[in-house]
Image (cartoon, rainbow, N blue to C red; front, side):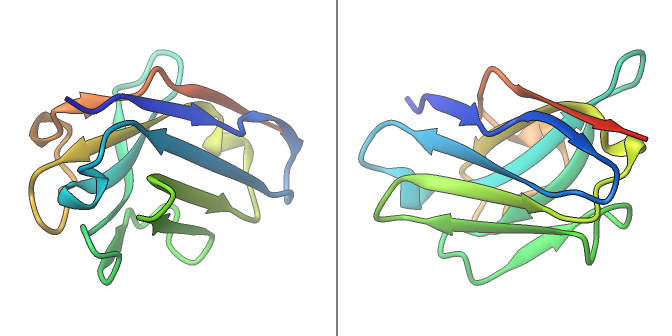
Length: 124
């Protein structure tokens, strides 16, 4: 069982930055690849990025590539999402999730554990 708690969301102007954190409970954090997903009002949940168990491999949706960076600190049981050059279309609730797949996945159905989400609002 893994419990995930996101933090760091908020209101930011377009072009600004935010750093999200996701703290995981338990001693097996390094056994899970981690992903970030987001869901905007009236839209389906979408993949943002993922990071492998070791942190050696990362994957990004085209919409965030070169602007967002995912990282993890297995000693602190935490995964991060650094978001730069934010756009109004990045406004959404952001969720972190954990999967047993070694490298992570862009499919939300392959993640067994989810956080409660944190709101990110980008004003124009």
